[in-house]
Image (cartoon, rainbow, N blue to C red; front, side, top):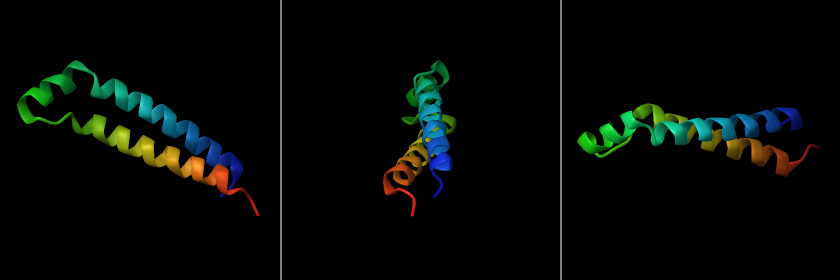
Length: 66
């Protein structure tokens, strides 16, 4: 994987994780947790997508180019 693409994935993953954390701690997510026991789907998908993108970007950076 290209170093620039890996860096973009890492930065995008960190941004998505931040947005997911904000969504997880939002009032709507708190209300959803009261009634369903789980946060909103939006918060979960942002956290999952951000985590996967960050791991892929970090893996691309650490693996190096050949």
